[in-house]
Image 1 (cartoon, one colour):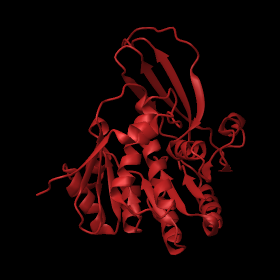
Image 2: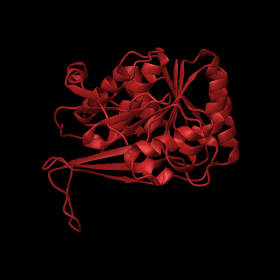
Image 3: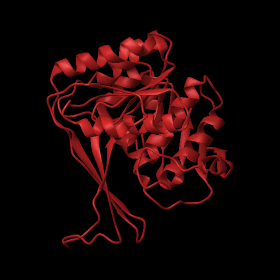
Amino acid sequence: MIITVTPNPALDATITLERLTPGATHRVAPAELRAGGKGINVARVLTDQGEDAVAIAPVSATEAAFSADLGDVPHSLVGTPWPLRRSTAIVETEGGTTTVINESGSPQPLTVWTELHDVVTSRLPRARCLVVSGSTPPEAPDDLAADLIAPANAAGVATIADATGAQLLGAARAGAQLLKPNRDELRDTTGESDAVAGAHALQNLGAGIVVVSLGEEGMIAVPADGAPVRHARLDRVLRGNPTGAGDAAVASLAAHLAARETDIDTLLRRAVAWSAAAVLMPLAGSIHSSHTDLARDVTITTLETP
């Protein structure tokens, strides 16, 4: 089983129009609504690809549509008194630009985090990988990710964190097996403008492999054992909705670790392919069936570092 934890779930709204004109009024088709949040998207992709996954997140019992929308995705929702935040993606068909507006979410009572921790740890004996993914709402404990990763590590469960700021640093100190920030998150967290230097800063705290998303430039994987840094990218740029691309990459990385695979190039090739295949889908949480073909078009090289 792969456990995904989403500390700050959302109701995702996707609006598609020809062109967004700032300051203008637009008449559009009804937004497509979906239960979302980064870990939710990861669990969707994994389930769709035949993996055994469960999504855990704090969601109010009044949000019946959220649970119903998860459909066949196994889930365990921890009760909270607060309504869901919204995440709105505005997709322009002319030019392929996507604008995302994310609400911050509401502070959660401490009891919510305690119950979330208990639900996660109760499932660790059956788990192969734990993924802690996405933002946290205001006033969330800085050690939230670390407190989930530490018992997973102790239980021999592979651990991944896709986070930023205090949560990313805490995950590194807790010894997460793999971290997956994007380039901006890594720079903002470590202060290092060079992605490799930022990855090494996290590894100096205790992290394992650091995979950094570089947008259209692909991804790099920085091993913790001093092996060469590897860079992977698709041989062309795909246009579409990129909002779920990072989550699809995390899903691939989780499946890789859960299977106890160790080859870095295999890890990178599939992560880039799944990420690219997500761009071709209208909503986050899905990947296009062409991902196997896309994997053949991923080029992997050794990144020259100082």
